[in-house]
Image (cartoon, rainbow, N blue to C red; front, side):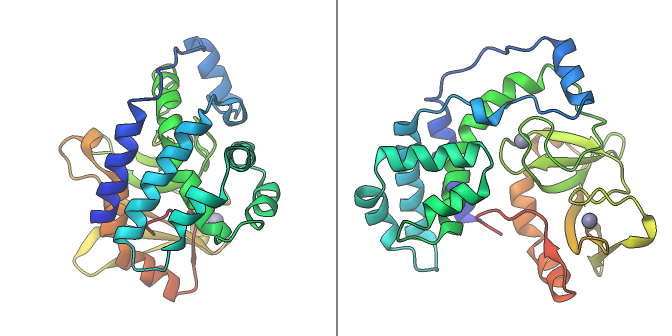
Length: 264
Ligand SMILES: [Zn+2]
Ligand SMILES: [Zn+2]
């Protein structure tokens, strides 16, 4: 949790240096986009300052090296000496285009584990998505979007929670942090709505925190009841860490996490 807080504070500090973008969509356009299954942000067209990403990556790497138990010591050297601006720009391009093959091909040319590079980029680009999402989300009603991927940026949900006021199941995007409402019975990873193929597990005495297991695709999503005060202040990435026991239990049963983050 200390790691999460440090990473988040670095990201937040950097997000202040990213210029605010004026919303380019009208409310009606945003609504239509969501209804048609599109995303409010076109990630491939996101305006990203490569030098700023590089700087943020360097600081995040520092936090990771300091706090992490895994061997990432060589990360510093990689960012300072191995990765130049052109290489970074290419990685960013593949990430934003969601071209996993291209990303892997480029990442494999470096000394670091491609999965670690992906996580690092995910963390470094998140503040750019926050900035772009903030404006877009205000334009659209995201309460009923029966979709497994974020209607704002298209990424996967980190986990879900039940909104206090009405019990709506809300998912939170792992990349841009937007929240959207989905039906209670639905696997966000394969869109399975067959109740017979969705079951849930919870720890004894803590029924408000569950992992929903999908028999169809073999993945799971965690869903917690919001604490009941202000949902806006419910920090989903921290709840994700607080429910790590559910990840273990689900994985012991042979289910795979639908969306990985650097902390989980
Ligand atoms: Zn998103
Ligand atoms: Zn599924």
